[in-house]
Length: 199
Image 1 (cartoon, rainbow, N blue to C red):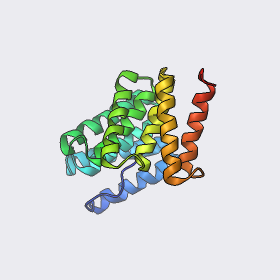
Image 2 (cartoon, rainbow, N blue to C red):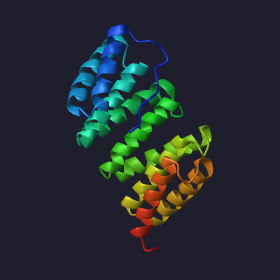
Image 3 (cartoon, one colour):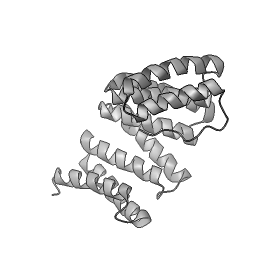
């Protein structure tokens, strides 16, 4: 899962304090307390800022991530889906925030093997990131890695290997073979190769 960068406008002081406190809980691995804090924060954001405010959408998405870490996967996917739906309405499908929410939605869906919805979401994110950010951007390569691994688990080994091999070549070319992202893609590729008929 990914989180959005800093907000474009300052929040009211109390909302900002609570947002930071909830994120600190999440970062400390205290996912259930973070969930409770974000649920309360979400209700206040919707009331004070509106349902489409950037902080409201960020909180909705983060709440989904807190549930994901607690393995409440269907609930998590539903919240990521709602964050993505609101972002599409507010910003459009190609906006960077919308793509972040879509990526998190796709991750949540493929983990519960909802391939029919999850794979097209990740494929759409990848297409848009390639156009907007370029094929060498870390976010693009991260999505390609996730999509490649998901395709393999879904049973499409050929497409998965092609995706992971290409992504590994691009990452190595852009960042070098010792870069953490390059190594992560290489690990995924190695697992896929080891478990495929091509070994």
